[in-house]
Length: 161
Image (cartoon, rainbow, N blue to C red; front, side):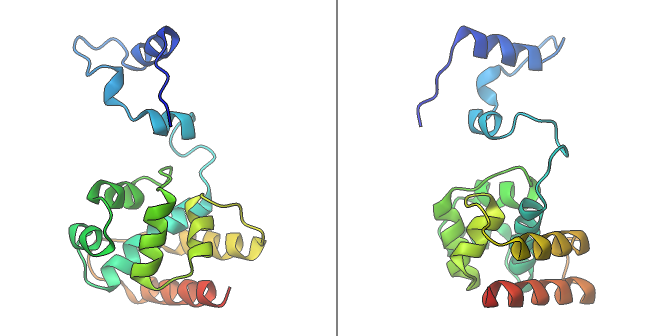
């Protein structure tokens, strides 16, 4: 991917800094995130991405792994793990999704759909992802009974699908 930095791009990013006396400059922002998501946070948020984010976090917690340990064992960058779990707009690289699928013993195809790297052919994945996303969301401690049940049901569905 080639990054094209034009005068217009600089002017647009300067406008994003507001009236701050000191700015970090336009290159401090990740240009990939601007290309992928030009909308404010929370707007047009895909439930599948929320489900993917929650799924990765829950699977990591279920296995008793820190983000750092997950990154190490899955052979992915720690920054990607953090972005996946904390930013539902973030779209990981397909390689990362494959590594996570391998790590958690989940189907690649379903995870690629959830992560936004493939278009879902079946609405059932979307429906289950929405249900899982709605039920997920908790502390970073061990999973609650409800979180465990939601995770187990969603993983079972993904394994069958």
